[in-house]
Image (cartoon, rainbow, N blue to C red; front, top):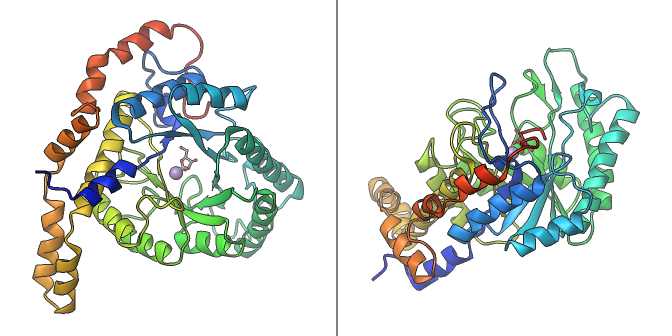
Length: 388
Ligand code: PSV
Ligand code: MN
């Protein structure tokens, strides 16, 4: 008999985690990017790799694109390619952080011509969304300043609103905008969208189709991220997650690797707030695999999210509420920790097999020979990297 109820299994079965196309390209630090044999040369090959994650886990039915990194001649063709491999194209990420014109900002820039260029880029992304069938436009802005006095903080916030309003006005009825925040980097003194409050204030001023994107790596050490998750769900403004984990800054490591307990606490609040399998709350990964193989890195990541979701589903809500009501601190904590310490891996393996999936997706993928195959096939050309 499974440790999960039929209802819990139904929830796990519905879980969907979007993969970032850029996770399949080479990446590194500003010190060195290590190339890997078989790394995709174009968006078609990135999608082929992402489809492997779906094939072995049934957890990753969509792939996010980053424009212009994933620019192609025909998005209809790219969409057909994805669908032929059993996946769909997902969120479109804009990029205003790699162009010389954006040195002092994009949507917040003092110069109207630069703002125009940045707004037009987002309008182009919305056109791409129509072709790919994507719902979400994800905006992360690398805007800010390095020195006190360098920038007019208030003026930039006002210009940000005006620019976002123009982009928002172009969204189709079924489309959304999610605004990601990050407390520092590349700017080190101030950032224009540094925290959930600023993102919330900006999206609330736009309307119902604008939501906050929470990247788990974008907070100061010690931040209670699950509290932010709770609050945004409570306000109906949690649009999406960029999952990853970090030890120091925005490390973009495998989700659940640095602090599994934090991932558990976040997922508990997601479930508690009605965010699990809620179409309003997109689960995405935003990671880079600098030293490990990328496809298994992504498989490990979606399994980590699944395992922590399963543990969080095991929290005995009635017992927890009773302990909370009666002020029994230690009992409340015991109920919570009991779920966290439950090893769900054997039950998940058994359940996967019952659905025709490999009990151990990591092992099954390793045995498939896919990595050796792409290393042999993908000879020549320029390997894709973070930034191309
Ligand atoms: C910025 O650090 C970020 O988290 C944004 O989501 C970008 O789009 C992504 O990383 C690029 O790797
Ligand atoms: Mn992100």
